[in-house]
Length: 570
Picture (cartoon, rainbow, N blue to C red):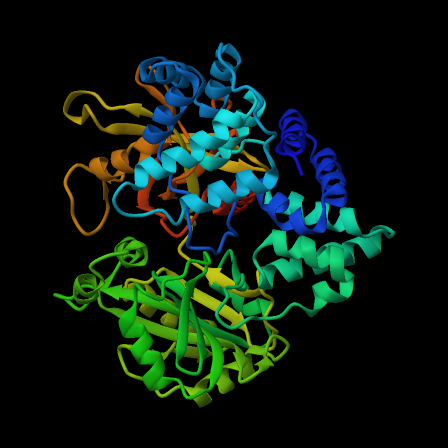
């Protein structure tokens, strides 16, 4: 399959804003794609060459791309950077320069999808001495054989910035439309089956292949695979503790820890650890492997819990941002094990010795979990649980959670099944009101005076479909000196620098990658921002290293909170 065919689809998608039209375009391509290429094409449509759970990354930085574009086109690095500052898109830069390039490779073979996919995947395995040169060579080989439009999308894919507006929901619906037919209600069932398969096999490339070869039956048969991650059940937000208690006949309350969800897979002596973001963190937590071997009495199982980091000197829980240092750490693991010890609080089990437990109620799953765990107090234990409908008892438990430095409570329905990958109202989060928002940094200004050299005021964005709309500016909650309770201007500046897309005077446009938790006094209507709303007295609480831009709060959430706020003020 020629890469040019995929590029034409990219071009159509980039020019199309209508969601249904995008689905039609992708569905047509999927039907026409040979089965042996379908998985690759489906990943490339998302701008990827690895599924989201894979540890592998292409790993090409902007500076290396400048050198590659320069070598491939004959233009100087200075010229390339100048053009990039105007467009904020290396793809457009190489397309323009490739069109201007006088010398073209004679008799160049047509690029295939397989060749592009193969070269980009190879980049992830290149390490050690001479790695930059070998990476340079693999990308240059593609670009030198590519036509200008092809070069644009090769560069964008390499940098993880495809820009064709294809979200996971569009891929899901396109798979359903490509390989199935039916009335409206039938198609809903089919879409749900596609999504179910993806929840348990988080790779739409594989799901598309299953749909084409095995149909609806194959999609519905997808189950948990020990050693491979899945999308976990997520909690919804509740307006109050009282409302959360009222929602269920049999509620159970647990602390909402300021930690990281950890999913533990065990098969004999083999153990895998994953986060809710599907990250494999098995190597980062060797002591947890030891706890599992010592404390879990099962041949094979998949259990879930919340992992907290502790200050080795004070013995007190640390905010998630410090635990995230361990999650992202690749080297000197033993050193950080001593610096940030962990505690795991277990609360669910979804698989035991060959049996999937999704359809069992939480009350039964909890008993099964209790039956296989030999607790190691303070290290590896069952999450404390309070079963009550009594508001006063619940409020006391809530206060204890907050005093312990945790975020609040999770109120769970003991009669509910486990639904992978969805917020279905089985679990409700209760946090202090006004509830903080997770927003994306989409712009900024360089600081002045004593803050010169730092990124100062930040432009916040909320999601609306594939876009991010402005909902205010923020400059408070960021510290000038480092301490254990917050983020500094220096840290934030270094984090944002790689994502600067364009610069005009002091104003910066930032690629939507970094998510921050924001506290505020109230939400106001505002014509000054594209969302139509602004946050009054916003302040940065922390960087959400566990969130990606697609996990940020959307405009609908802000509108809902604004409505609740107005109701309370009446």
